[in-house]
Length: 59
Image: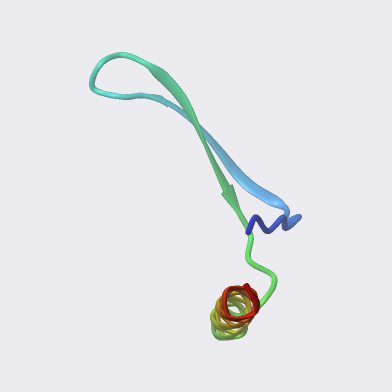
């Protein structure tokens, strides 16, 4: 499952790796508290598992 969040960009970092390849690092702010986000992620994962188990049981 893919989740999309819109967060403000706090910093853009342009750099190169050890092979000379250019990359951009985007650092975003975190409006929600980490504990609330992890709790939401855990609930979502368990919900997905329960849905998968229900589908398997019905087939």
